[in-house]
Image (cartoon, rainbow, N blue to C red; front, top):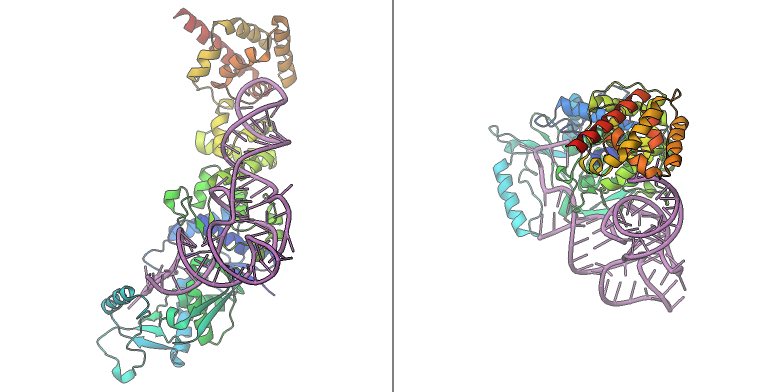
Length: 482
RNA sequence: GACCCCAUCGUCUAGGGGUUAGGACACCGGCCUUUCACGCCGGCGACGCGGGUUCAAAUCCCGCUGGGGUCGCCA
């Protein structure tokens, strides 16, 4: 079977977490089966669609590495891939429905509809669906002075069954569910359920995998396929992603835009890995490379129940990749964040790789890595109050002076040579490393927390280390005098 | 309200008639240790409730409850 799957967002905002997961699952399915991943922009709502949103969706997908095989900027045989450019097609199909009497003109006004809805909502079970009084009218009855819409002539009995690869068979009673929904407006502009069917049909989509908020629509769409005499694609409805309060994920739960996670310092593959595992599993496995995801992903592994988005776990996944990805690759990324956040132009060299090697086990995000690594690049830090008070005091003065003297005498600046100096001093004075390391750490970083002291010094150059030791020494002297 | 979907630790999940119900995040201990991390070891912690079916139910069936979704000339 040839797989042609699609991701069909409406460009009314950024690419959000839920959309990204839907796109990912479709992408994985396509790659797994050497199929085609189609991107279609559902922009028929002129009011809400914006070019910025289209761009945001492209950016989000590309950042995640979910490039489409067919779609905007990647034209294929089934384009165009913007619904607003497919109006001729919809009209053609509408003609077909009109000719076959599968749709009819309905002159009911919006006011009449509102009144009807208010009534049936109040009555509940009783007058469930809207039954248009125009369904059985003929041309002779059409008022010339009123506008109309094209409604689908839905069956009034029987059932419509959705064979869903994820949810199983879902049965809808036609009397309850399928009203004579609007297929197109008077001017021929189509509505959602109609465009989706025409597009999935003409784009030869084999598997429609989307959020389960569309499950109810599927019944209507199936009826349309049948009315058109066309074969159904395979349907699969993914459970929703919820916030920590089990409500549908929204802005108030925190970041929902994929690109916000880039800003927060997440690696794209970490986001992909987390999203893959939210709603899908492969035994006890947690971490997957992209090739592994493609190989192991399957619709059978997708769960039926909705899942809660947990940023804590995504942070852990991110940390795993920061820690275990190729250091050079992370260093390159690190340079980008240093530039973005601190305006620093840092070359990606052995020193930067060394710094990343030290920081990687200590940072959950790239942003955090910038924050905890500032002192490797900038001298403008103040001493944190507590550690300064605790470690930069008179007792440390002779140690700092001794160390400064011996370090300045070093003509090779390596971890080993530095360690040698420290050990010599400690041996002579019969001290524990802690006594020396902590004051030096504060002098170097302004804090009591950093990578190993030898590593830290060796990654800062000799001159800077000496300057910072002088600064600390001076700081202690000043304090003593005051 | 009607209809549709769902239900294993706080969270993501494995397991789908007989398991000490497994793993991961988070949390709590301990070890390692120059601080902080990493790492390692250990701990806490779940089958929503009620009925069936069965020798046996977390697992199958029904009901209830709870949560989510949909009820537009939006998509």
